[in-house]
Image (cartoon, rainbow, N blue to C red; front, side):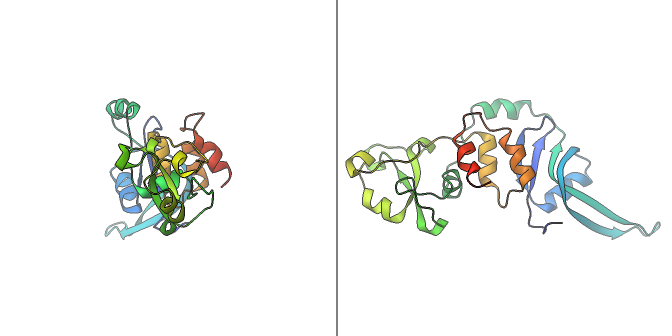
Length: 199
């Protein structure tokens, strides 16, 4: 069993990843009988109170992946054009905490968001114009393009799909959750190669 801080991956009934939920939300979904099916390992059992008449105790067993009932057609249509919000946590996860200039790995506090085409030169704050950079490389590049600074990117930035973004938001993603999410990544996703180094 895992600690109650372990996140549960919620999907729709068709198996499309939707979000991470904490144990409270997972138990609520089970209690309301909104679980279409569960998948993956059992990560915890939550014990409730005792029934005054039967003296039996309620127990809800929570799996690492739960599919929930409900209409998902609108969500599926929206995901075809979905651009996830950009924030440093998911940006650093996309780039596996590597500086995209020097190639070294750093903790989050040693990293920064670098705009390939600087904002001062008309660059946008979008997934395809930002990379993870260590503070030293970001300071060296300053308000220049990589070419002007004599620096070379080690990987091309990309916009994560919905499933990739769900993965990037995860904390302590379990092996069965990772396998499930990887199956939903585009075949040519750069994350396949990046994650193969970590698995």
